[in-house]
Image (cartoon, rainbow, N blue to C red; front, side):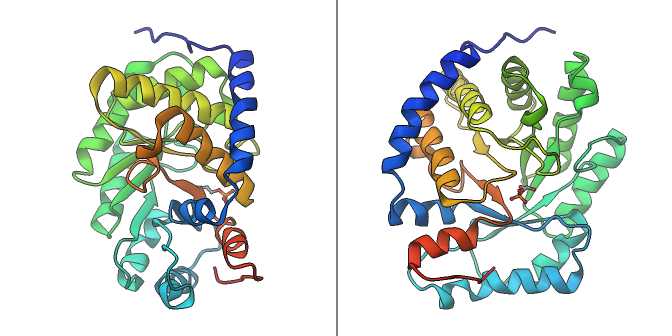
Length: 284
Ligand SMILES: O=C[C@H](O)COP(=O)(O)O
């Protein structure tokens, strides 16, 4: 099976990004910071997470409307699969989704059978979104059918839950990011996501550009909208606005909703709230 290479060179992409950066600089507004906050998958993926700490993390989301009236809450809480039940039992506010990483996150280096079972268990525990990692061991050697079979198998197994496929774009070149995007979308991904956040090389504007381009091509060919989630190392409001502007410029304002765009982040929310409120914020 062959998948075409990226239609733009890295030089073309970087040139386009220069223009987008200029537009992003004008998007650093209170309104856009509030928009970015509403798109966050508020993430805690620590080996030291406990039932108590995740319950307390979830309670902060419950307290958000009272603490910040008039500001939209985050889009989702993202945790390890064994913590999905804690979020489900602790979450009291509506319109905040429960995302769980699964499928042998972050390495994806385990058996497909176990990946499917872990994703199913996370959904049974309350997750309505599942974030898995592309099996890079197969992808990097061109075993694309293996990747497609695994992704589609997990997608089928999780029913109505949404599937995000993490490409780990930080360790891929432009053509590989393009190919992995096309492959994941074709295999049934509802979202494609840049990174696990567990490698030094995480989200990048270049990867975001390529992935949004692939989503745009798919939309033009099929009329189907696929979501995009940059994640890993997105900490400052300006980082978030750059990614939001990339999505806006390539895919359009219709993608600027939680149904189609998320920002995976564990350290961004308070920084956005400080820009929005003009005060020091230590809420999350
Ligand atoms: O979305 C998942 C990532 O692990 C978040 O990465 P971060 O902790 O660098 O924000």
